[in-house]
Each structure stands twice: as C-alpha cells, then as structure tokens.
Length: 140
Length: 140
DNA sequence: CTGGTTGCAAAATTTTTGCACTGGT
DNA sequence: ACCAGTGCAAAAATTTTGCAACCAG
Image (cartoon, rainbow over all chains, first blue to last red; front, side, top):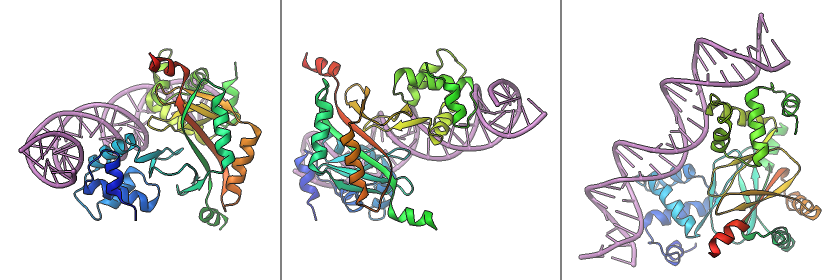
C-alpha cells in the first residue's frame, strides 16, 4: 500500500480525501477513464462530483502525479506516474496492460529523436491487438 | 498528387466531393484535428457540415483510409494511412512530424508482444518534446 | 434509378466554469 | 484562521442522431 498522502504533498498538493480516493482507485485498476474513476469512487463517496475528478486529474497531471494514456478509438485512460513502460491495449475490450521497457528500446528512442532538433521529454508507446481473453472469445 | 477517388473506391466508399476534399486537406497538412479539417474545408466548400466530417472520419477509419493519432493533452489528429512510422509531437505548439521506423524498431515491437498471449495488430509510438521553433521561442 | 451520402437542426454527451461552502495545514 | 479545494448547477463545447433532399454509380 503506497502512501498517497505523501505523493500529493511531494507534488505540492493538499492531501484531501477525494484525491487520495481517486489515486487509490486508479492504482488498484491500473488504468481508468474519467467515467471509470467516477463510477468506482462514488461507491464509497457518493457526493464526490465529476467536476472534482476533472479538476483533479488535470491538476495531478500538471504536477506529474498521474499520466494520461490516450487510446485510439476510445477515451483516454489515466495511470499513476511510474517507471517507464509501454502499453498493450486490447482493441476489443479496451484492457490496458503495462510492460516494462527493455534497455534496447530506451536506446532506440533516444536515437530516433536526437538527430532532429527535437528535445525529447517523454514517450508513449501503445501496441494494439487482441488480449488472450478476446482471442478466445473470437475463436468460439 | 494522389488519386483520392481511387483510394475511396478501393475502400468501397463512394468518391464524393466532400470526402476527397477532406482527404486532400489532411494530406496537405499531414495531421489535423476535426476542427482543423472543418476550418480548412469550409474555405472552399462553406456548406460542408461538421456532421459530415465526423461521419466520414469514423467511416474512413473503419475502412482504413485514415488513422487516428491520439495525443496527450490535446485532441486527436488524423492522418492518411501510410507506411509505418512514429510521431514526434511538440508539447508546446502541437506540431506532429512523421519519422520512419528503423528496422530494429520493428523487431523490438514484435518481440515485446510475442511473449504474451497478445495478438499484435498495430502500434502507435509518440515521442513528446519541443520542436526547434518552440525551443527557440523559449530561449528568448 | 436508387441506395448511399449530405446538411441541417436538435439531442445527447462530455467538459468547463463560477461561486458559496468546507476542510487541510 | 486562511486559502486551497469541493460540490453543485449552469454554461460551454463536443459529438451523435434523425430525416428530407441529393447525387455518384
């Protein structure tokens, strides 16, 4: 169990119950859309408003606590900021799975951007395909 | 000058003036949001409606004529389907530049997904940073 | 001709905003 | 106690939909 309060304070944000709850929900599910977060969060805290989620997701993104994962054909999901990784995204069910980068990957991205007069800040790699569950479902 | 009419017919779609115009606008700019397309397109064809753009972008995506490029913190842009490549995205001005993949990149992605019971369909790689113009602007 | 396509206007959905009240520090 | 943060409700922005008229094949 991570200390969400500390994460928020480190980012210069007040550790409100709402924020910790949002972080907790994202952390447990891994990747969640705004709607996903809202539906999960109001189970425990029914008065928490959608506006609060919007405001906080934006704020926590600016502060680097959470990261947006935009997805082709679907709404963006959000995850806690963490070690660099790539995403396997199921085009069928929308599931997102993290996969750690191998060192070689790291190297290639640096190379791809260094030739340009382009100052690399961060990268985002999504591999789209069918997860095993959806493959099984299609086979039947 | 590509033959947009042919692209559409190959995809099983009627080659309407509206569709060819949309494709032309995307092609010339490289990457455009729905709003971008609309503003550009009505300069020549003022009665073309936003609804038509939404309907056609979705349809042409399904048919594989255009591809969505979702971008962190901004609206998705759309490009013509083309040879596999990655994107350099400027976090400041939103500019998107294509960069062809080196062979090694190809290889790594295959490897990253093959261990899993994950059936890779397509990939999407965005490198975020500052373009040269925005670097110059910040320096001043 | 004729079925797919368009344009309009209205509806639905998503996101943002203003402001009085609340709660962390 | 102070001010960031919340919740509500309303506004704005975005996207979808239904349908009559239209046009590419």
